[in-house]
Image: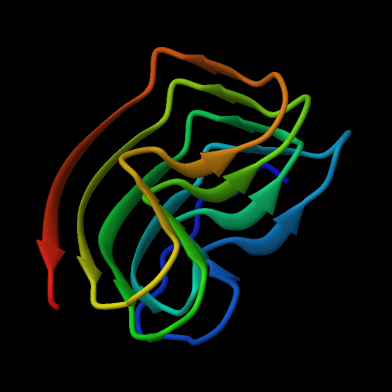
Length: 131
C-alpha cells in the first residue's frame, strides 16, 4: 500500500487508522493518519502487525474507553510481533487511559513480542491517566 490518507472520527474495539492488522510480508508506506481512535487494542496506524511500516505518520488521539480489561495502546502500533519493521515514522498525539487491570501503553508501540526493528522513529505524546 503506497498512499496518503487522512481520516477523522472515532472507532471502537481493535482499531488502527490504516488497518486493524498488517500481516507479515505486507508493507505500508507514505501514509498520514489524522484521527481519534477508541478501544482496547489501538494503534494510530494499526492494531496488530508483523509487517513493515515506512515513512508514515499519526497525528491525533488514542483513547482507552474500556474498563476492567487487558488492553494495548500504541501511538503507531497497538501490538507488534516477530518481523515487524518500522522505519522513519513519527507521531504527535495524546493517549487517554482510563482502564483498570493489565495495560500496555507505549509512545510508538503498546507491546511487542519477539524480535522487531524500529529505526529513526519517534513520538511526541501526552499521556492522561483517568482513574
